[in-house]
Image 1: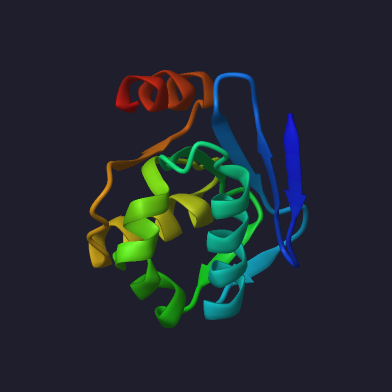
Image 2: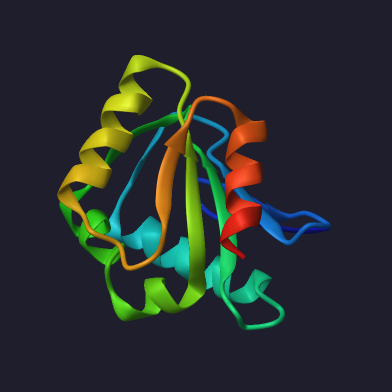
Length: 126
């Protein structure tokens, strides 16, 4: 299992090649942290084929406009096969809904309240 720590998140890749991203404390994604995320995903993707990413949004309290616009850029599209967002409270559900409504990524993305459902969906996307 490979683990990478950024300034506001921990990414780990499991045996099924799913990358889990979790913010250990309350945070907001900025342009800078999204660039860190992108570099980390590139580093963790040993096959250079894109990753299946499960984002635990529990501690995510916001995403800047600049960070949101990165989601549909070519580099993000190249490095992500699919993204599942795990939401657990009204604030993260609101952030996920806003994120999905305002941004149109070129890869499959969906929110879930159950991690097992999110993993099953991701595995179907590979």
